[in-house]
Every structure is written in C-alpha cells, then in structure tokens.
Length: 343
Image 1 (cartoon, rainbow, N blue to C red):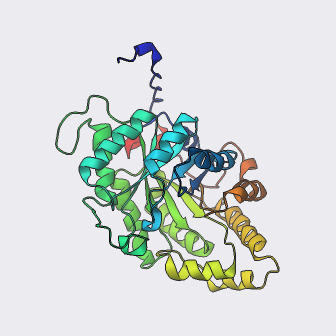
Image 2: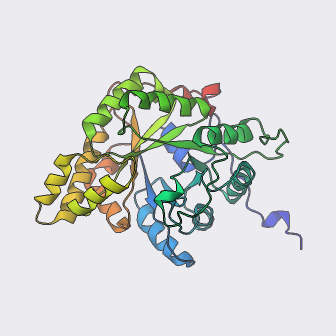
C-alpha cells in the first residue's frame, strides 16, 4: 500500500551554517551551556520503561544519549531507543559502536536513524567483548571511531557511501565522539582529540570527571592547540552511590579515574549516596567555569531519578543563556558559510 505524501512528516530545515536541524547543535552554536545525559537501556522489550526514564531526563537535558551495549553488555539497542524517543518528540543521541557492526551495517543504520529524525550520532570504537556478559561473542571492529567519523562525514558532506555509490538524500547529522582526559599518557590526549576533530567530530563527550585539576590541565592544552574553537567539549559527570561502588568502578571499568580523596570522603559520610550527589554537584560547579567547556554530560547509572535534582542544585540551569567563560573565543563554526562548520 502506498502512503500518501501528505501523510508523511516533512523534513525539518537545516539552519544556515549547521549540519543538522537538531536541538543540541542549535544550543551549542548559540553558546548555551548544554546538558546531555545517558539513558540506561532496559533489559526489556517494554517501551514504557524507556519513556519513564526519558521523561525524568528531559526535564533538564538538551539531548538524551541512547547507549549502545556499553561495557559490552546486552540491553535494548540504541537504534530502537532512538526510534522510541524520536516518536515521542525527544532529542536523542544515537551511539554507534564499531564492535558489533561492519561498514555495511553501520552505513545502513546511519541512513535509517536519520530517516527517523535522529540528528546526533556519537561514534565509538566500543569496549572489547571480554569485558561484558557475552565474552564468547565475535567482535567486528571493521572500523574504529576515527574511520567511522570519516565515513559518516563522507555520507553527509559528499553524499556517497564508502563504496563511492551516491546517496540520494544524505543524512543531516551532528557528529560526536568520546574523549578521555584522565588516562595516561595525558600529554597525548589532546592529540587524540585533534585526530577525531580532523576526522569529523563536532562535539565530544568525555569520560567521568572526578579530578577537576586534571581536567583543567587537559583543557589548557586543548585551548593552546585551538581545539576548543573547532569542537564543543561536553564533560562527563556522575554521582557515586557509595565508596564501595567507587572502588569497584575504579577497578573494573576501563578508563575511569577516581582519586583516593573522593573515595575517602565517601567513606567518611553518614549518607554515602547523598554525599556522592553532593560531590557531583560540586564538580559541575567547578567544571562550568573552565574556559572551553561547552556543557556537561550526566551518566547516572540506575540513578536517573536524581539527575534533575543534581542539575538543579548545581545552578547550571540559571547559568544564563550564553556561556560566560571569560576569554572564550568565538568559534569558526559560528560564522555562517565557513567550511569549518562541518568539522
């Protein structure tokens, strides 16, 4: 049966100088201090579980990340969550892990996601299968995060697949990547960011920040290299439920750096969960004043109900329409018509 043209949702217009019509890109290009958050995917086929978690996050977030089997653990897929979120009018970030798909599947997923109204894609290499609950799974890794960025940028900007075949209607998407300022060698981390920006990253979301001085040192290098002018840097934060949880994460989750001082503070608290939220609020308040930081990315695993409380207590909702970081320079992406708009 043919669907009448008048029954279709019209494609939204892309503002001049933008890569997508999405809310997240508009907010960043307007120099708003943004808030994004991860939606912890359910081990369920019930869409209501997705909507319940999204409703809580949407109160304070500009976009919601649909994680893609993070930690190599199986959950509802990122693509399915994005389909549900776009249907309900939310602004999702599709996470794409190279671990589970070859280039044929990835390119098809990008077109399908764009057709559903997804405007943000976060490109990830993905954790190894040995870290998850299916260690016997066969990893793919046909691409890595950098070649994935290049692939989607080619699809969007050149209107063709990796094979060279033409795409009749290219995906209009805002491209993101992950960054980790907190693992050695720290001196190399800004160089890694530069490679991802060159490949097409327009925004990055970082690993959890529990060490603000280390982040400040990283951002100083980033500014010296001019990378904050080419990419929007969104810093990952999250509440720790207890000292025991913090120790487990530090030992078992690759790439997460939690200083001893944070764990000792949790151990000395009468209510460790409350203290974990207090620490998170304080980190946000410090991070928001670092020159070059464009927003925060909240990762509250199984604690979505506290995200609104944490964001409200931090004061970032009252931070003002524009980022007020002293010395922050206008980014080339703000100047309509320049090629740097597309990374």
